[in-house]
Image (cartoon, rainbow, N blue to C red):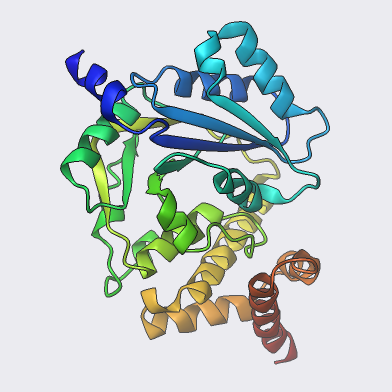
Length: 300
């Protein structure tokens, strides 16, 4: 179309930098890559970060692309290999440090992009240059319009831990906010980063339509006991998120978070004791805080 031709001719190239950490090569990587390569505009690059995998998943991803895609598409794929297992947060930061796009997209292996995602975003970006982060609804999921409605004074209790999937964020905003943090022991770096953007006053808007699809999650094992433990772990993760972003919450919400961490499960307590041993100063500081709150509960 004329619009696609104009974007190819005049938009920066790359306009979007997609960063994907991987620890094992399987069909999910192929499907995810295909969803990026199928975008209606080609002003993008994709950076696969091999997080010190045992099967060299980054090289395997590149080999697969070379066999199934045309040469120009393959040239838009780069592979970085970490010299140690560093986790999702730092893998994303590693990829973003080398990114050349104006906008970033942190993509998980269970996520597929609709073929219009980048095109719809590019059009919206040209009309609203003051917006710093864009996101989309998920196909088949309830509307996520609440993500753009939050401000520092809103009650976030109904959205604890929620974050949009594969949002598009200005690369300079990622740099200005120090990127993703590995402070949380169970992941949650996406939710943590989104709350960081909210606290920084970054303007976000939702794209029209649903351009994101995720694979169905595998059923949890462990029966009723396992489900109870998962709920407990999730509550503890939400409490940790609150302590990292206290300005977003009411004092009563913060008190509840402290109470939850004072009643921390033994499994979380043990994980925290080793989680931040070689982390950054920020990560060690929050680990010390959470352990101190847990110790208060154990001493009472």
